Image (cartoon, rainbow, N blue to C red; front, side, top):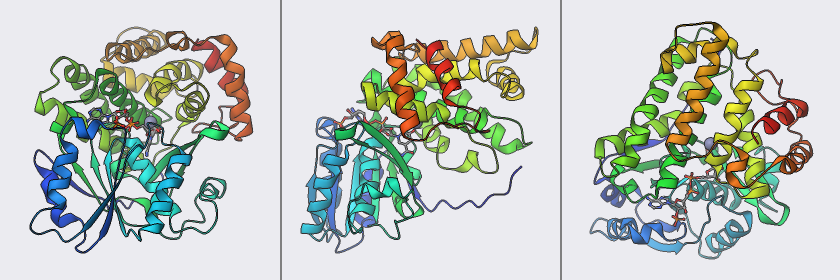
Length: 389
Ligand code: NZQ
Ligand code: ZN
């Protein structure tokens, strides 16, 4: 196991009814900006519940609102929020939504305190973030883990760029996770969430062994839970236990815990971000396309872990090594398909002609040595993308 330094300060309030705790979680006297997306929170009652909690007898806050943060939140929209934060002297942010709203809030929290163009956060790999406004999150979509991590991904529409940053200053102060608020998710977002969480685990688990037994077994436990409960969330949308297990699994998949002391990959995510920026695929759709092809192309570098994954997640212990690896990758693909997420570019109307622009974007963003061993060169990315058509 490698050395590590682990610190996760996010307070998590989990379970039905926890939104009411906002009345005491948000600091007294705060000037709060409540941030949300395109309106799902109005339709499912979350908006009213949050407002009621903030207006309760113990609350002494001023609450303003900023709606309209889009999926794959854009720099252009977030800049408008930063202007509002400054004009209204906001001192606390409350993100209510999925990963896009929470990521957008992280960018606003840091950007509002920066001099100059906040896009510099990406150019300087967040080294220019020395402080951020405090914020909390009410999660409505289990997928990204953003509610308990310090990363965010923002898209600049003008240049078709999707970039990520991480800073210890943008951990949420708290995250409220009420599984009943996920009942209203459309099937497509349920499937996306399951695939995103699954691939987060894989990026930290399916590399090469370093004898990190707990990290490996935690990772396998998360994968097994997704395999067991992912399809059930689609067939029994109001099964509380299923939703609760999925929600906590997605959070644990990317709150740093399973990634300590182990090599990490993230090549699938980096290629996936370019696919979203160029062609508008949902984040998880890109992962469902890239991951199986990545595992096939990188099977030698990942052989030992692929065999462990085959045995412990899919119960594949019989037959030759190559047959077990093939079967494990096929099972992975079939699982993604079973939660409604196609695993080929052609499933989204894309073809071979769409590969070259992705490679050009990877090169422009200097993403030419990806993966746990920096072995995913542009040539390897090309093989992966061509195999995924
Ligand atoms: O905008 P509204 O109307 O709220 O609708 C949203 C949106 O259309 C809807 N939705 C959310 N909760 C709902 C709901 N609909 C009904 N009922 C509910 N309870 O779902 C749609 C998608 O929401 P979004 O927030 O975009 O999805 P997700 O949570 O998958 O976030 C995706 C973004 O997170 C980034 C992705 O790149 C993408 O930009 N990621 C962030 C990461 C992180 N911070 O660590 C890691 C991930 O790998 C990922 O890159
Ligand atoms: Zn992801």
